[in-house]
Image (cartoon, rainbow, N blue to C red):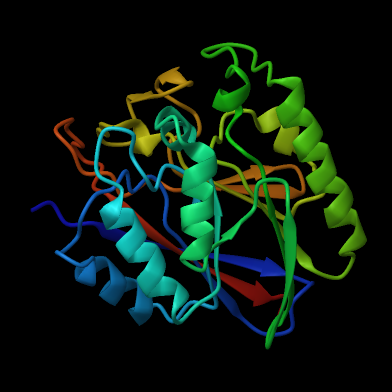
Length: 260
């Protein structure tokens, strides 16, 4: 069984006075890591996160949803969890029912909604957008014309972020590629997935192909600077028949640190 790696990142911010640790679980696609996800759960708990973020495609449209629900149910017993859907959850044809099921498991669904957490390290503002696939998607491998409904939802999230003046603001958005919408936005961090790490990696090449980005994607996985906003793209935890050469499944741990 192919194992996953743990990618750790750090960000400094003036908005916090003590560390806040965030776990990002993206693009699971109903993959199992142990019968009851015990391998993934053990790694997640070892990081001692304050928050768990799920930026989409946790449920796959061609696989049973049970492995994802087992993970949701187990993590919400110990940690606050937040989720936005991806394009594969939309492809199930039952996204509203899935959202209800995920919410019933104790996960907060951020489809345009917002939440503010008061943690020992300071205040963290969380919001998220739905995947644009439900409104007809958008063009790929070129200029990214997002649906008007998605743009409106994002604007509502930005307005909510403006009200959280002293909080560290995070946007969950499944897709990393529409960076023009994220650059110098009201968010300190955008957490995304979707690119699957570019599927294949060779030496310094950060991925060969990613959905919606095409060959040699710029935002395949890692931490990027978009003006005053940072974009963190998870390589995802999907394990399937497609090869992931040099690009193992990935669990992401982000620590927010106060400025020294």
